[in-house]
Image 1 (spheres, rainbow, N blue to C red):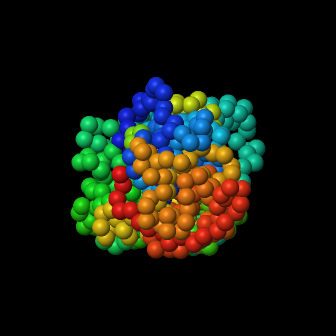
Image 2: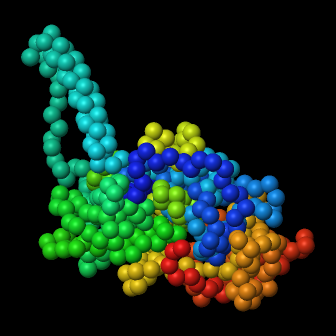
Image 3: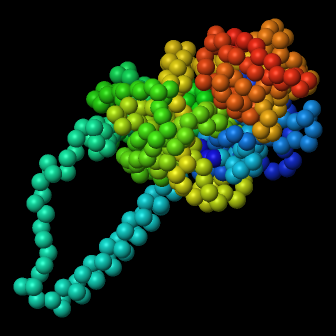
Length: 489
């Protein structure tokens, strides 16, 4: 699955890591990934849905797991410390992190081409359009030359706008109202790398919500701009970013005259499969693009990286068949009432040849797009605006990241000799031990480490959840009060 890399600080020629990849680093589960665990890029095939940088890997789906030969040495993830997890970078193979997702084509970050390449793509598109138009025109000219003007059978339309019935609740009505609040983001790192993505107005103070992988390249002192639908461009700065959630908040430096009309936020928890969706963004740099579809599925475990190979992110995503492409990342996914229900973040690309994703490996939308639920994104945005740092819920264990389909198994030993179950942590207090296999969180079936992480991150610190686990062939349940970790590592 690919997360469109909107502005990821990765050059367009980014190559997948070479050499043998470690497969014994435990990850802590939200804790499920160990803080010091080596980065495991998500499977190739998932790419950030909206981004200008080609090739970041995204989501793990049920079945994504890091391969390993021995359960005791398999890769584990610690939640939240999960070095190498991030929404926006492409993954390779079939596991969470560095391996491809759940045994299928990896989810990779989809990046939209950098400005220069984007212009080239646009020119190519214009040329093709011109050739088609020219061919049609030539054909019409030849046909008309052989006809008698008096024999014309054309019929003119009445031209009554009212007959089109563009109600405020129609797709056209919703798009016209939302477009002025959607911006195209251009991010450029200190060394010149970067790309484009999308964002939308979050509040009247000038805060804009987007993906972390869209602005990652500019977060360390680079340049960031936001262009509105009226063509006006404003300089912006990163207020806070959460690599694990793939969420970021930026703010206009001088919002004077900017149309700061926040988009209404809906409730992603109330979304049902089959609900209509509207996606807005700048696929391949084509700002103000509107596409429609439905909610194809809910609670899809997705893992991706930011394209830089340094971190990974996890989400329990909304799946939609609305067309989403590189450059759509960070844009709003809206319902039929015009409310934002998610942030477009990743896509599954077809035909990826393995590798960390360059533009040549991004085949575009195949109707499998993934969005971060707005309920979660809103909570993260509030933390980022208030403190500049993300807060992650965790249970304090390190679990295997290999996809077995049987659950998330707590490692026998943690990363670098650390304890697999944090002493006096939430899981320890609830009686969990190394070797236990977690199979359910409340009513949600847990089939792998990545699924456990994405489910825990839908909650907030202090929430109480019920974990079902197996030990010695017998099933047990226990109540766990989620702890917390502040900041990315």
